[in-house]
Length: 89
Image 1 (cartoon, rainbow, N blue to C red):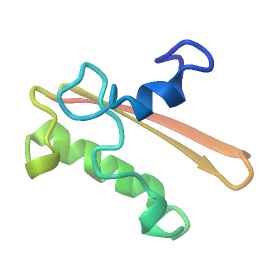
Image 2 (cartoon, rainbow, N blue to C red; image 1 turned 180 degrees about the vertical axis):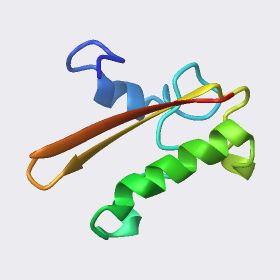
Image 3 (tube, one colour; image 1 turned 90 degrees about the vertical axis):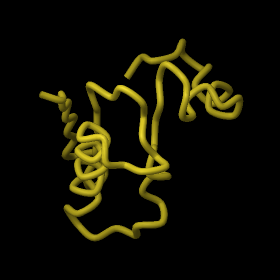
């Protein structure tokens, strides 16, 4: 998605540059690894997390002042890809 220079995202994650309290925060729910793979539901889980963030109801995971959220989901072997961008209103 271009948030970091090519090849630098891994280092940024390891350094905590995407943790709560930073300018760019990712995977506030911890990501989807522990959710298994209920077909179609993984993308829905991402949208639910963003909705909670934008409503200010994400408890300890809350990003202060969240105004926008982005979810990317890849289905199958990359045959179906969606990007959803939500905005608080």
